[in-house]
Length: 81
Image (cartoon, rainbow, N blue to C red; front, side, top):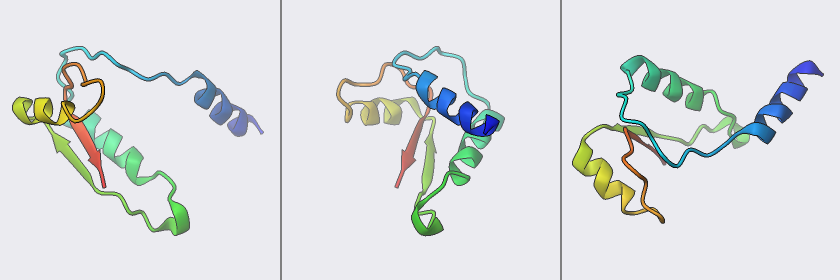
């Protein structure tokens, strides 16, 4: 029951980040994010996702123009397929 409460509390208190600082994200941090994504549940456990980490500034800028409103200075972009 306590773990369930933690999940509910996490869902209720999560926030979207719309501005980013310029601190570089380490490979270790990116790997932790990717590993967390790999452990996410999926229907029938088919795990259909693919991840791409994009660090090249001009490509990040191009990709950010595809969102409305554009992302402000993303440090990296994760693509989920």
